Image 1: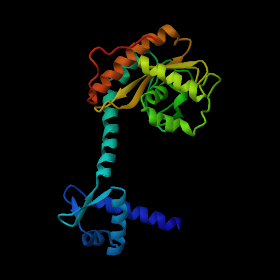
Image 2: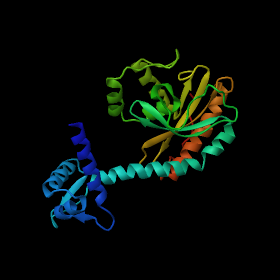
Image 3: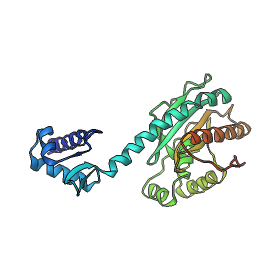
Image 4: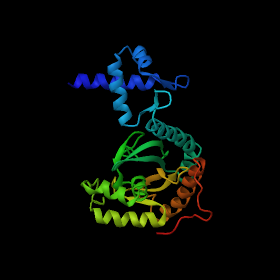
Length: 264
């Protein structure tokens, strides 16, 4: 049974890849010929894919074409490429300004995934974050700023059936306390992590918005508490919020004319 399922998934993937800029619409017979499958098999695949809006039938021609869901997935991929390009223009400057390690992270459920990193020349050996590394969102500055940007319904859904696990004794593991923290984060426009992920380390993060004003990523500065005291975190917050705003503008976001960091 697992082999049959994998075979069906492979056939569906091959079917989707048959469409191209020059072959925007194809009929059942043509698809069957190109894929080397029976018409009945192709029809079943098309029916299943159409139910998920990955394929749609053009009633005027009786032929099939890629559905709106494929377009939506394509815009997600496109936004990731655009994000990497936009971040590249500023991430090195941010490291130079602060002297600390810079991360860019995206939210994946209740975790944050780091997609860019510029390591401080003064990095301590026990800092183990790297590109592709995951961490609990509620224990990180990047994660908290992205959780704070979620619609309330989506945030509640995420937290509903999750047990918040801690990384250190300072991690927030109570949902009500986390919601209060996120309200503060939302109000001031940046998030902090003080020994919540790694003892004696701190970070400050700000959100990156796309053209639709959706927070799609966060950028943070991280370093040891000996260099990231309260005064330093406030200075870095101003720089990070400004940098995040510039990256957002590269992605088509129009930030408020007088947007600025609020004091905590």
